[in-house]
Image (cartoon, rainbow, N blue to C red; front, side, top):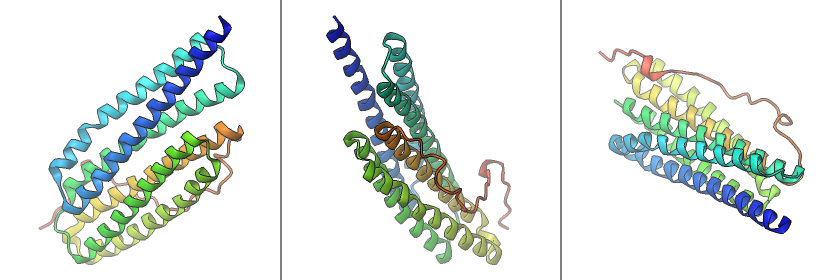
Length: 243
């Protein structure tokens, strides 16, 4: 009977992790699709990505519910409890990544009157999208393989995304001052850059959770606070005259 219980528990635990990896791959597909949306300014595809956020939310809710059920049915050991808590934490980060991708898709509606200076920023963001996608793929592999070395590399790579964000914001500020007529488009790119930087942060959180699972070490507060410039602009509440 005890062996049967253990087998059932292991199966449930493995199934939750599989669901989480599938959720991560869903996020990765969205990010890859958004790369094309940004390149082509494809508003129709952007709207589809926004609508998919409800699916991401549902996946997070299901994982949280399954974790609660496992905790209620079994009395996991310290190691297994650590895994359950980490998986639950990861699902929240993935859900928030979905929110940021939704915000990026929303910002596509504001990309108008883009001149060559602004287009250069779009290319930089597109390259950063590829980097973040690679980070997400690597961190999912790190989870499956319990590979803390790869998880630590993912954490280090997040600095590249922070630097892209800072550089892009500085460039956009300069451009908006020089050419107020394209203010709306520049603000749209700022929103995308900011949300992408946050996706990188959430990917880093997942990498830290992998280390927590394997080593039992909570390293979330070991790294210095980021110095990235934060400029929050709620486009839905911004009224811009382009006359």
